[in-house]
Amino acid sequence: MRILVVEDDAAIVRSLGELLADEGYEMRAVARQDEAIAALKEETFDLLLLDITLAQGNGFAVCTAARELSPKLPIIFLTASDDEYSTVAGLEMGAVDYIAKPFRARELTSRIRVALRKHQGADLALTFADLRLDPTSATVSKAGHDIALSALEYRLLLYFLQHRGKLVTRENLRDAIWESAGEYISDNALNVYIKRLREKVEDDPADPRIIVTVRGLGYKVGE
Image 1 (cartoon, rainbow, N blue to C red):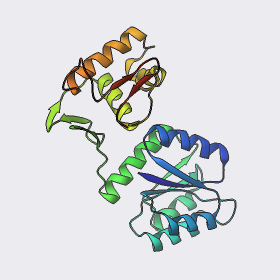
Image 2 (tube, rainbow, N blue to C red):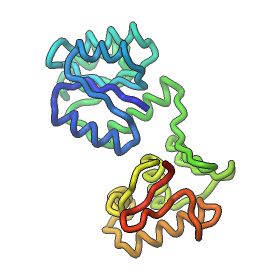
Image 3 (cartoon, one colour):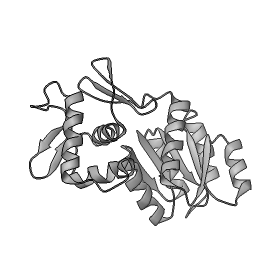
Image 4 (cartoon, rainbow, N blue to C red):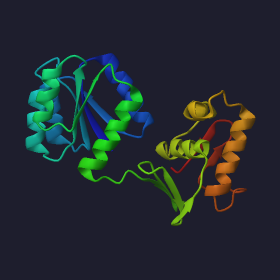
């Protein structure tokens, strides 16, 4: 999924870049109205995340152009928390949602998932080999058969599939499951969780082909 972020605050752009990358999205960021419109003409995006006040021009003009160029493109406005006029105006222009600054990371990613699912009918399922994880229903299946995972196992698998083809360190995994566990995850505990997950998703847990160990570095799923 590709997201165009139109925002002129460099700190917010950096924060969004890290957040969206962690969620498995590809982001392009621009700061000006003319840059945004040019990007919409040249490339295809799955969602537009749009600030109203820009370094040049404004978000309303970008929204209008986006509606002409890609009528079905979901648009989420970023607005000041007390700017009721801009919120209403954005929705009336065709935005599917808005979120006030400063936004909370989980709320924003949840709104993005809902917008993608509702307005594009997008299949957000993550797959590898015969494994399929559907984050909209929090279900996992292998070769068409449902697999029952614990909350920690599900969170681990979700993180692995969101970072398919990339090296995942043990510290990455600790951060990913910290909240579910409610406490610091030791190396031994992490080994146990990965072992249990492999027993459920691998054809041969002793010779894993999905969650592969990269010796001395971490793990990797796919190329």
